[in-house]
Image (cartoon, rainbow, N blue to C red; front, side, top):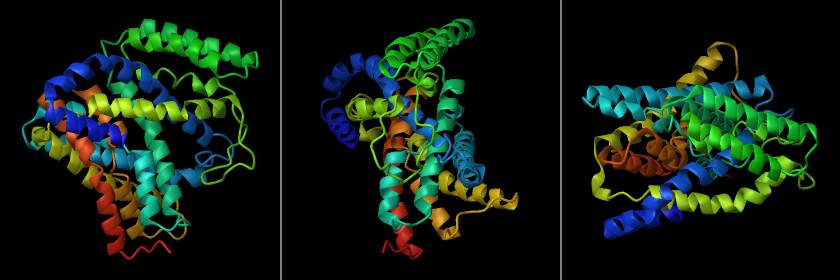
Length: 359
């Protein structure tokens, strides 16, 4: 993903015409088809996290991170809308969901640099990011249709796809391929014809794929590799999705660095400020209604992990392409999403400032 983004930026700023000619024909194949497998892997993590023993199965364990995830989405969205309104740019309000995103991979890597390996901040951040992914899928489906919404074709085709997936599960089909190629293809056409983003096509299908009855939980490696169909889906697609993310970054991240404008700074401010404030405020509210933070997680650490969650990058970049048509506003929003990696440096600095030591 990073390699693709850097290559796209270099190419777009040295040969913009060549970059546009190469990437424009790829947008549909990458954004609408290939990215379905990225969101499929995200759905797999959510399915396992909500299984018995999973990180989000226990209300007591998951409540505070999930509430914090809601705050970490509401805070940036409200700040984005407020700044767009105050600057007299109501046309930018459509991008309110861009700063709601948290890039789970980048955030996790930064958290491992900032916090000790045994710190409760790391599982808290991962639970928050998983919940953020789940809520982000809902936002994408509900608020960012790719075309005029046609409910009847959508419900008919996606409903048929779910019936196919249910039938396959009923028949104890142990290969994930019939679910993906059969039910998944029908679902993709349902999303496409129905006007919703077809990259979400596997989201309603993968919960039907047989999976382990229990999940070992975060940071718990099973004694033996899991070979249930859902785990096999992840094993097979993990490496291809890395190349898909490279292609996604290459085709979407190429914007002139001189394109920075008001939307750039609003997206960036919403992520860098709205995320930690929203997460801290929601965590405080969760405690007021009776839930408790993990032991050993002081407020200073909550603020630092909130800054870490401000790395939007992959999902934020995807939301920019769903929010705006090609033009200056889209380019500005993309730069804001890409520049959110600076949250990682801020988190490292904040961690040093409050005295977090990794050892």
